Structure formats: structure tokens, C-alpha cells
Image (cartoon, rainbow, N blue to C red; front, side, top):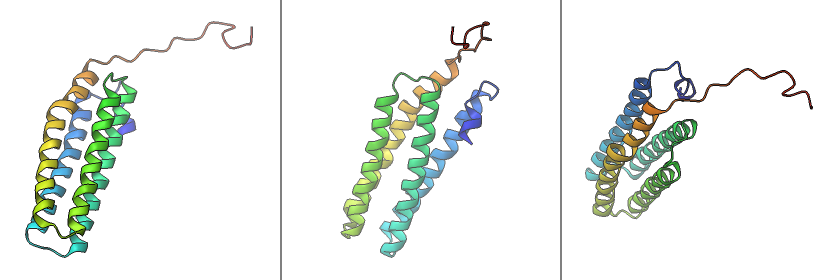
Amino acid sequence: MWASMLGDQVPHVQVEMALEDEHRRLFIQMDELQRQIASDAPLAKQRFTLQMLDSFLKANSLAEEAVMFASSFPGGLAHRDEHRAHHHAVCLIDGHIISLEREAALSALAAQRHAMLIHIREKDQEIVNWKRSFKPAHLTPSQPGDFDGD
């Protein structure tokens, strides 16, 4: 899906819509996990939902990182580090769930939700703004003799 969005022929709005759709899925998973933890749903169900959240988070992170790389986004390394921090937070939530620390799990999930909202509103917007202004270099036809070993 993302590979087709990286070319010149694809309007920037499609990249933004795809990012928003992925973010929406993340929050749906967080909402479901919050309901499950709060209602003491079976541990296996909570962990499955958390694993789905982590899968969506990894997919979104990889997609954003592909866009950053393709458009030479200057803040890419710091942005990638934030993605790693989000994944680490999910692992901490898992530890609370496994340890049956319901309140700690809910608190950590709320903190992660807040961190992701800020990340999307600020950091992901930087990518969108950069992508809107990015103009890829066009290749020019080679001159005779460019690749003939001369």
C-alpha cells in the first residue's frame, strides 16, 4: 500500500489519509484494551488485544519510516526513536497485565494514549508538512559514455 503512495503521481492527501486510518486503528485497539482491562476480561483476551495493538503500532511505524526515508525527512532518526519508545511502553503495559496489576496497566495505557496523541499531532504532522513540500529530484538521461567504462 505505502509503496504506491511514495511516487510523484500520488496526491499528498492520500498519504495523509492512510496515516490517519492507521492512527484510527491504533486508538480503536487502545479503547478495546482499556475496556477489557477495566472489566477484568480474561488475561488471554487482554494480551491478544495488546498484541494486535503492538502489530498495528509496528506497521504504522514502518510505514511512517518508509515515508520519512523516501522524502529525506531530516528528523527521521529522532522520530524513529519515538516509535521505539512507544513499542517499549506497550511492552511495559504487557508486564502490568501479566502481573495482574490492573490499575498500573490502565494508568500506563492512558499515558501511552496521551503520548501517541501528542506524537501524532506534533511529530507526524512534521512528516506530513515535509512530504507536502518535498520535490523529488528527476533523473536525467545519461550522456553517451556515462556507463561504458571510459
